[in-house]
Amino acid sequence: MLEYEFMRTAFLAGGVVAIVGGAVGYFLVLRNLAFAGHALSHVGFAGATGSVLLGLTPLWGLVAFTLAAAIAMGWLGTRLRSRDVAVGIILSLALGLGVLFLYLYSTHATQATTILFGNVLGVGLDTLWALLALSVLSLAALAFISRPLLFATLAPELAEAKGVSLRLVSILFLAVVAIAVAEAAQVVGVLLIFALMVGPAAASLRLTSSVSWGIGLAVLLALAETWAGIALAYATDWPASFWIVLSSCIVYFGSAIKRPQRQVDREHTD
Amino acid sequence: MSAHAIALDRVTLARDERVVLSEVSAAIMPGEFVGVFGPNGAGKTTLLQAILGILRPTAGEIRVFGQIPARGFREAGYLPQQRGSATDVRLSGRDFVASAVDGERWGLPFPSRCASAEVDRAIATVEAQALAERPLCELSGGELQRLLLAQALLGRPKLLLLDEPLISLDPHFQQSIVALVKRIQQTEGVTVLFTAHELNPLLGAMDRVLYLARGRAALGSVDEVITAEVLSRLYETPIDVLRVNGRIVVVSAEGVVEADAHRHDEHHA
Image (cartoon, rainbow over all chains, first blue to last red; front, side, top):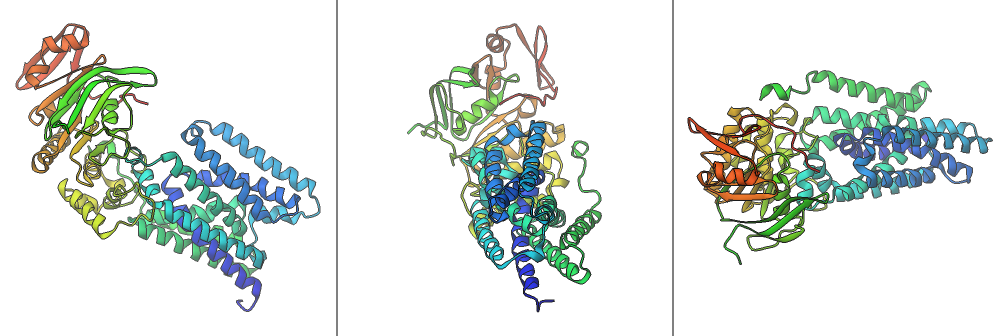
C-alpha cells in the first residue's frame, strides 16, 4: 500500500499528529482537562467551516479559533468550572455557526463530513507540511513549559508559592492543546478528538508510573493506533477514523482491565 | 542583618479587604519549633503565606533571616494545607516529589543528576524510600503527607512552614509526622512553624506557641501562653485551661475551644 503517494502522505500526517496528540494528551489527562480538548474542537468546527466559506484551508481557521478559545479558557481559569451551562451554550453556538457557514457555502457537502470526522487519506502535501510545522512548534512549546506545567499540575499551591504563575502556565498549555486539537482534527475530525488526544494518554497513565515512560507510551500508543487505523482503512475501505477510534477504545479499556481496582479508599486507610 | 529567623514588626495582614491580623509583633529564633494555633479564620494560613511572600502586609514589616520575603523565596520550604487534586494518579511517589525540584524553571520535566540526588535526599530524610516506589493513588493520607514534607525539604530550606500537616490523620499518623518534623528540626537545625488545630499532639515537640485569635497574637512557652489569663485576653471572653494527665483542654463559656475535635473546614480564599 506504500506504493501510493496518498498512503505515504496519510501515514506521515497521521504519525506527526499522533506524536503531538500523545504527548500533549498526557498532560491534558493528568490535568483532568480531557473535556477542554473536546470543547476546543467544537469551537474549531466554526473556524474550519468559516475558513472554507472564505476560500481558505480549514486547518488555519481551526488553528485561529481553537487558539483564541484556548487563551480565553486559560484566562478565565477556574471561574469556568462552575459555569458548565454557559460553556455548553457557547459550544452549541460554535457548532451552530459552523452549520450556518456550511449552509452559506453550499457547493461542498463533503466538507462537513471531512471536518467533523476527518479524512486522513485525503491529506495533501501542503497540509502535511503545515502539520509538520505546527507539530514542531507545539512540541517545542510543550518542551519549554513542561516542567512548571507538571509542577503546577501535581502541586499547584506549592508551585504558586515558588513563583510559578498558574494562569500563565494554564494559558500557554491550552494554546499548545489548541494547536494539537487543530492538527488532530485533520486526521480524526473535530468530533473524534478524544480518540487521539485522550485515549492513548489515559491508557498510558494507567499503565506507567513515571512521567518519562508515561509520555513515551502515550506517543507510542497514539502512533500504533493511528497507523493501524490507516492500514485497516486501506485493507477494508472503511473510514480510517472509525478504525482509529476503535483501536483507541480497545487499548483504553484493555488498560482498564489490567487494574480494575485503581484506587484505594483513602478515608479508610487512615 | 537580624539575628531572628522571623521578625514581625507591627504587621497587619488583610485578606479580601478583611483585616485578619492587626499590628502583630513577634520574633522567632533560628532553629525554633513554633506551634501556631487559633480558631478557624484566625489567620494561621494567612500568616504563613505572608512569611512566604505570597501575601504582602498592609502595614508593618516582615523579615525572614533579615530579608523581606517575596514570591519564589528559596529559604522557606512550604507544605500547603490545600493539596492538589492530582493525587489519584498512578505516578510514583518519587516522580511526584521530583516535580517540585526546580519546578519553577522552564524546560523539560526530567531532573538533572544533581536534582535527582536532591530528590533522593529529601525522600530519605522523611524515610519514604518505600513509599516513593508506589503509585500516588495507593498511598494513604499520612503517607502522602510524608511526600509533601519531602517536597517542602527540597533545596534544604532554613525555614519550614507547615500548614495543618495533621489534618484528617488519625492519632498514630499524627504522632509519626510530629516526631519526624521534630527530628528534622533537630538534625538539620531548621526553624519550624507548624499550624494545627490541637495543642496536644505537639506538646512534647514544640519550643514555643504562637496563638492567634481576634486579630491578635501571643507568643511564648506553653506555660506562658496557654493560660486562662492570656487566652481570655486574646479571645475577649472568659477562658479556662484544664490540664488532665499531661493533656491540655481549653474551654470557654460556650464550650470546648481546643480539644481533640477534628475540624477540616478552615476557610480561606
